[in-house]
Image (cartoon, rainbow, N blue to C red; front, side):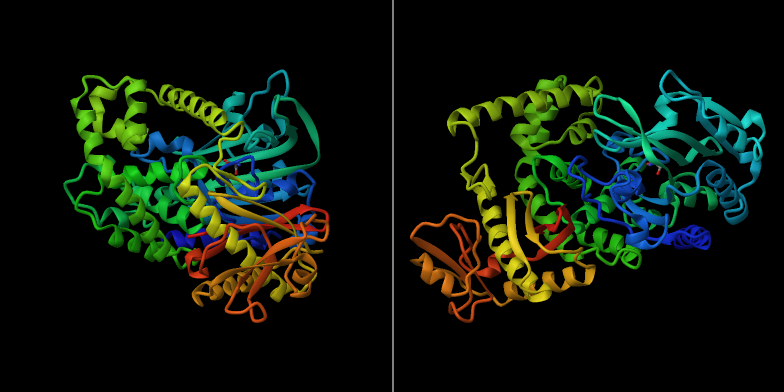
Length: 568
Ligand code: SER
C-alpha cells in the first residue's frame, strides 16, 4: 500500500529538483476577502500571477510548489460517491512569468508515468477548443500529441477548459484536464488573462502556470482502490464507524469530520454567515449522523492521521467548538426531526422553516427526509434563505435607524447580545495584541485602524515590513500569556493631558475630549501589560478573552500591515 505521505513527498521533490521553491500550505481562510475559503493551491499565489507581488523577493524563485489544504463547498452534495470531498489536499506547481505549456505538459506526463507508474493507455487529456474570446489551445494540443495518441486528446468547451478566476475577479486562462481511467486527476491552467467582474478579459503582464492535482484521487489510483475513502487518508476514519452503517453515511462522516477539524484549527467558528455558516452546516450534519460514535475518538483519529503533516491541528479547540455546537443543536434537533417526519412533502418554504425554527440545515433535511424531500433543490432553498435575510435586514434597519446593529462604535459591530460578548472579547484581545506587537517589534508599531465583528478582529498598524511567522508566534504567545495570567481589565477616567503622561497609547491624529478613559490590563496602571485610551467595551478580566489566534498578516497599504485574528 502506498502511503499518501510518499505521494506528497515525491511530488514536491520532483518540482524542487526542477527549480521550484517548496512553499507551505496557506490557511483555509484566505487573505483575499473576495472568497470565503481557499479552494485551490493558486489562492495564496494570486498576487504573483497578477504581478502585484514579486516572487523573487518573497521566495527567491519564479517557480513554486505546494500541498495546499483546500475546501469546495460546491461539492458538498456529491459527497458520498467514490471521489467527491469537501476538504481535500491539492498538490500544485506554479510558474510566475517563467515556464509555460511545453514544460508543464511534459512534467505532467513524466510524473504520471515515471514517478507514479501509471501506464500510458490509462491517461487522457482535454484542451480548450476555443470560442469567440479565447482561441483554440493549439500549443497544448500539439504538445500532448507527443505523448498520447490523438484519440486520447479531446477538445473541450469553456465550462471545462477555461479556469478561474477564484472569486469575482482575478487571473484566468485556458486549461487542460488530465484523466486516468476516465477520472479527472489534474487541471493545468495557463494564466493569461485578468478576468473582470463583468466577464471582460485583458491580457496579464506576464503568463503563468497553475497546476493542481487531487491528492486523494491520486492515492486511490496509485493504490488501486475503488474509491477515495479506501485510501490511507480516509479509511482509518471509516474503520471507526459501525460496520452496519450505510456506506454513504460513513463517507459523509469521514469527509465532514476531517473538514471540520481543519476549518476549526484554521480559526473558523460556527455562525449564520460566510465561512462560519459552512462550518455550522457540516457540524450539524455530522451531529445528526453521529449516533453511537464518540466525537472525541473520531477527531482524535483525524488528528493522528494528519498532525505530522499539519501540526497546527488543534484537538482541544476542535472538541470545544464541536461540543458547544452540539449542545446548542441537540436542543432543537429532535423536535425538528419530528416536525420533518410529520410533514407530507417538504417544499422550500417548509425546509426554510425547519432551518429557521430548529436549525436543520438543507443537507440534514435532504438526508433525513429522503423521499419526501426528493423534489427539494438547493437553489430553491437558497432563494428562501436570501429572501429571509433581506426581510430581516430591512426589519433591523427600521428598528435601529439604518444599521441593524446593537453596537456600532465604528470599530466594533454587533447585531445581538451573543455577538456583543464576542466582539468585547476580541476588543480586549486587540489591546493585548498591540502591546504584544510593540514588545516583539518595537515602538514603531502604532495602531492605524481596527475593525471588529463577531467573525474576527482586524487590526491595522504602521510597520515598514512584513512581520515574520516567528514574530507573529511570539506576539500570539505573549497575548495568550496575558490571558492565562487572568489580569483585571480596569478603567480610569482622567484628563487627556494626564492620560498621555501615563504612557497609555492613543491615536496621534485622534480628537479626544477633555476627560478620557484609560483601559489597562493589570493590577496597577504602572505595571499594566497594556494601556490605551479607549471608549470600551472590554471584558472584566483577560481570562475571558480565551485562546487567541493570529490568522493572517498581510499588507493593508504602503507602510501599513494588517493582522486578522480570532479568539476560540
Ligand atoms: N486552479 C486549478 C484547480 O483548482 C489548478 O490548480 O483545479
